[in-house]
Image (cartoon, rainbow, N blue to C red; front, side, top):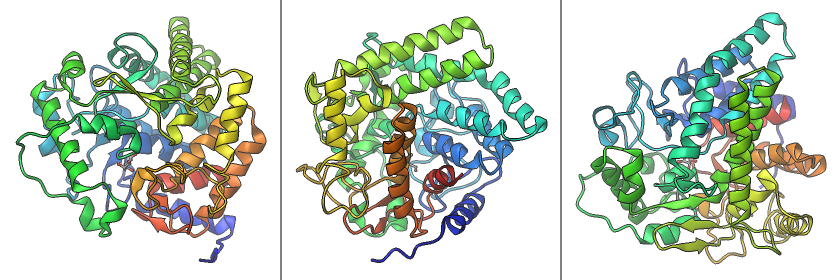
Length: 445
Ligand code: GLC
């Protein structure tokens, strides 16, 4: 396949049109057909992409998401668009409005959460607003003043409700909470999940992506749905989930993202004279979760691991998760250098057969690798963006630039696919995926 090679200007224009096309008014659907609602971490990345186009519209995106925040502080993983069907499990299956004491009064939501990347979006919005006149700056600052307590509440919920023993690692009770639904990272934990009798269901995803090899299997889906039943049986109560759920893991990637997001939010707080006590707490969490990530790592290779709370076993996989410490920092110099070598070497970005030098979700040399299957191998452009952003933040300008230019080369096919086959570059999953367009817009902005 040759690069059709849209020019950067054409590509940016197409990405902007895509986001406009997916705009439902006050929320952007994650993708037009497969995901016709708002997803939590998608919304944050979408706001990153909207910020260079319109700070005002980016603010609306985060406002919509935060309006669906639960009373305990959780940002739910899906905010359902009013009157839109076409996605399963929808509100009727989650039943959060009737079961969960903390569900919001207005919007319909799911009952689980997703990775806390939102502080990054807030930072990008503030950055872009500074390039504009007083009115736009005022919109961004008014947003920050108004939503600051909600952002801190969100982080506090993660630090408390999801780190019960205070070890600096975030517990998840559903693979969907990791954002990497069927990653080999969760195979062991899902093996503990024994499904019982549950209401029948029909998968809507397979009517959009007809090639079943690109999506999770039916066996996987049964377990995903069974976990909802377990959550419903304890009415989504934070404390009860910790014991009731047959799936419970400590996610090292989410923990690293959280540490990084706490640092970002703390810096924003300092720059905008937010309450000292908040800023101090945020710094504290950043440190605690960085430490939590470090305790999972191998001293020599620097590679990080997840932990299965049910079997009490470490989960080592050759997936993006092993690179978590590169996001939040803290490794010794030698270990960090070793981990960067793995990231850039033949197991990941430097694999000789890769079409583009960007990290696949699972290493092609791993026995878990499947080149077309969702989080088991394909390249996810939004992850390339996240690493490129984090590397810039760590002061690795050249590495960040490499990911950006390779990510843009991949995106120049103009499909804005959800994920790509690493060797052929074939676009897979949903086309016109909002966060893929957002990544491109940030890169080209
Ligand atoms: C899939 C992805 C998840 C994403 C959602 C919407 O479920 O695994 O990370 O948030 O789609 O794009």
